[in-house]
Image 1 (cartoon, rainbow, N blue to C red):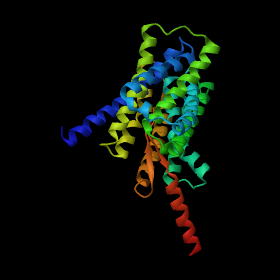
Image 2: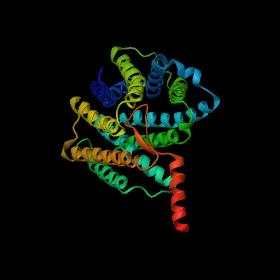
Image 3: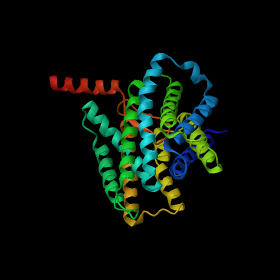
Image 4: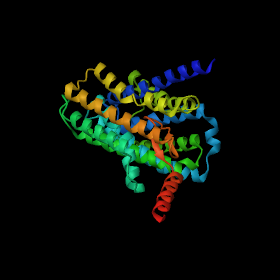
Length: 325
């Protein structure tokens, strides 16, 4: 297979990942209407663990105490993200949830700017303005305006941002497959434990629920991570980001096919959120040519540009040297 053909098929595979992620909003919304929230997440990530170990068997042997600690912290953030996202889907539409979740792409650089006390780049701020304006327009859609489900989903986006920052700091010192496995186990144990004591849910039965668990656990987590990891060997960060950033659009499409309506104002808001994500991603990828920036692969959701500590230190030293002169 030629390099061009390989890049083409890898790109198609990434489009499939974005489609699966977009479809999970409708799939999960339907599933948690018939099955308890924590039980669904517990089983979802139990399935993901089995699939992940089957795809990455060496991850088990790469575990160590330090990786367990880092993975547990990242897993706590990931658990919060999935809980609030799934909880939010009980009270909002899959379409709105998809676009609001996508806000984490612009929230992450803001969090980094606050934590690292660095002035955000101009294009990053432009992306934030687009996305926040879109969020305001989306809040007045035909779906009943802003509601508690939207608030929970926005908290989910903030939790995902915190998760990415953890991965971009202490997480980068560890084997990525082992670290991911610890995160999957953390979510499964925490959600399964809560369900065991609070929900006492029956074993999952029924075709639609089983399909939901397989789609979200196998395709949406384990297989998606495998494809992302493989794709980064052949595709540029720009192309990877542009493909995976289509996830909210697919979420909106599947929501529309399921009978949801955003209206003209909602569609405009969704478009602005996508524009904000696009600007923030492309600005970050462009900056990667000027500093040590990385696109951190994620278990679910578009990659996010993260600043490595060495780059921050180098930039700070350069500014200090300029001041001294």
